[in-house]
Amino acid sequence: MTIDSEFKGFIAKQINKKFCRCFWPFEECKKEAIRAHSIQNSRVLQAIEQNGHVVMLQPKINFDEGPKAEFKDVGRNKATTFTGLCGEHDNQLFKPIDDSEIK
Ligand SMILES: [Zn+2]
Image (cartoon, rainbow, N blue to C red):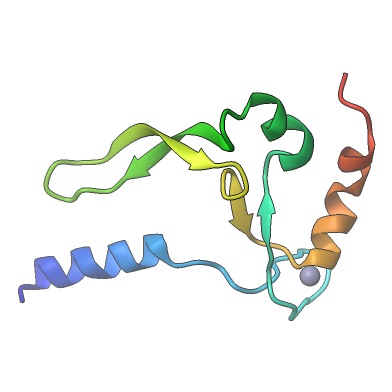
């Protein structure tokens, strides 16, 4: 294995690494981050889904050919999710948006 391939492997591993702890910035929080939607699943994604899927641009890292992006069908419950906040802080941050009416 060359240094080049080791470096590529390290970078790929870091890119695919999932965050697992809460990143609430106002106080230290040691709770585990949940998988939360960055776009509301119950109202926004539901409005645009077809057969339980939405179309998302999926980035793909290929060190030999360069970065690529493809549009792919992604299950609605998995689409637009990230793991960055625990359930309590996710709710605290997004509750005002989740509870208000979309106009
Ligand atoms: Zn938290």
